[in-house]
Image (tube, rainbow, N blue to C red):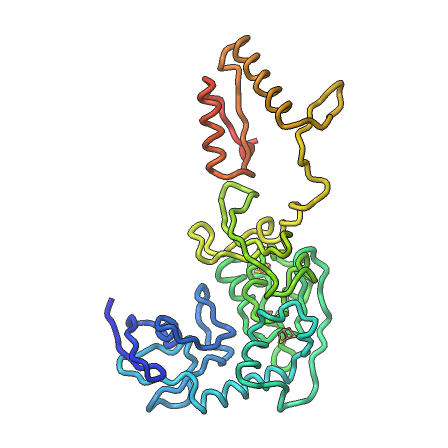
Length: 351
Ligand code: SF4
Ligand code: SF4
Ligand code: SF4
């Protein structure tokens, strides 16, 4: 792969030919703000917060789509660039409910972060604001399109990565918004509630319902784990506050699922603390399930296995495992059954 050499903010940078200016800068540890960019999506250069100044060039190109060229001299924070970003943010605030005090996204919102970074506290363009009804009729995430900055990441991930194409831009100009076809609620659309749009949204326009009110971004620890729902083995981070699970965020570095999840892994974590969950073994005695100790339960299972094998031979024994344990546990389970002399091993996924 051929290399190019350029200068970014006075720093010599060696980059791969074909990289965008944004990628070249990131490869050298230079951060450029973005709203609409995501490495898994086709670059569109729509939000223009990533504009940079290229010496000898015309205008301010969007770094996420402008190719890096050999010998380029680039400034990512020049006076012109900063003025352009401030104007951009000021325009976004013209139509934005500034309720950071109670917004679920506060602390991890890119709009909030960039306004702080460039000292933009209010808009220079006061006027009419949109009033789009809040939507929370589905069980998984809520949509507050008044906080949408129309970056288009949600509709692009839905179409380009998920393939569902459940949402897209609706209307034009001031009335522009993101919506399912005919502005139906998302549950009436092809949405499969994968939550990818929620994860990529840079503002508080899309929020997981179950996590609402359970903690601020800076109070939450992230613990990497494997999804217990099926044998695919997707990875994600459990968001934990005070030893309680309060949410899930994707692991984009996971080789298994590269950040993608299905509705179960993404939104189905609340069973963990359910009072209806079985936490002790139950043994049926006189037709009724009765709580037992683990010792009693394991002794009963071992004695029944022994009795079956002694009476009818090991072929009479079969083991049925579960998709809701890890591959390693399934491996151990089949080892155990084979060790007891039977090859009759199966799995609930084939029921
Ligand atoms: S989306 Fe961001 S800027 Fe808007 S209210 Fe929420 S935290 Fe504040
Ligand atoms: S949850 Fe998934 S399927 Fe539904 S709109 Fe978002 S990205 Fe599309
Ligand atoms: S809902 Fe979020 S991700 Fe979608 S366009 Fe609006 S700000 Fe961007």
